[in-house]
Length: 424
Image (cartoon, rainbow, N blue to C red):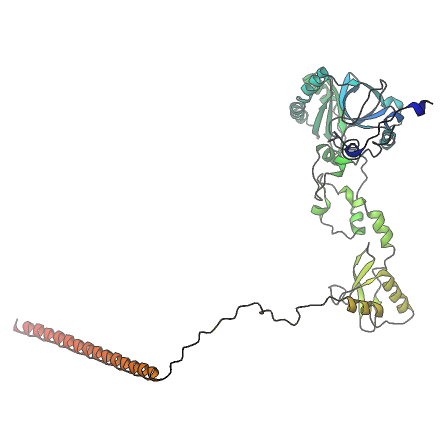
């Protein structure tokens, strides 16, 4: 009877899905899409709530006070010591699945939610958060003075300011007992040290990957699996360290995403060492499109020569024929050749001249002169030529006479100077 009398809130229109119920008021890292958000009675199925703190740190709590919590609410939760301030990121049935994913086996790990955050709680929270950057810089100086081979990447204060978590990266084991004493004396709070790897640090900082999307470690990935270059070889990816490395300078986690599919499809391909023999030539393995099931062969072992692409089934068929001592006429089957010829693209401009759109230069036509006008013009032209020749001849004579007179004058001057010298 109680189940029948319960009233459910039916969400419709813009209150469904991505608009508000599933993702609304959620801009945090490691976001979980609540695809059960618009299912009636989903929030009442369990009192467990997922709460997120700074960056990727999450916790799971019991809603013992039956508060009407929804995604995006800021709550005060139980901590040791004091309380912490976080944001509700998930409610309902999916929280149980998230707890299994986080490997929380003990009930002691799940604490209580006290209340919705009040103004005094938020004031303490903002005051504590304002000290984080300064604390991180100072703690790095303290670690450097102690000669510790470690990097403090981030500091997170608890919501009430009574505790601080120091996240550090170290290649080897670090004895930081003295460091904890110095940090407690410097900041007067309870100190907790957490070691993280390069991938976890990239997830906490966040960023955009070379694919253009947010980093997987900052949006949904919690458990990190080791990645090897073997995954790149299986997928025929070039072993270029700059392209294989992610923002954390480690191999990209996404190299593991499709390895299983490539392994499954790769088993259907023929061996790379097998040579295909035809009546025309011998063909060697050159490359393969694993997911499409296509293999490309070349007539030369080292370079791409006379490339032919065939299906994996056709390659295995030719291998079986070669084992029986038979050689096909060509790698491509006859039906495939006919189909390719029929589907071959037609070049509509094959017979056209490439200069068909060029503008031809028009030759200027000379005007024809007919009748007596033509004779008059020809006579005038002859007279003009004669006059021009006479002028040139006259100028030449004048120039010649001037040169002769200049020479005679120079000769006279020379003789006069010679006579004067003799008289002296």
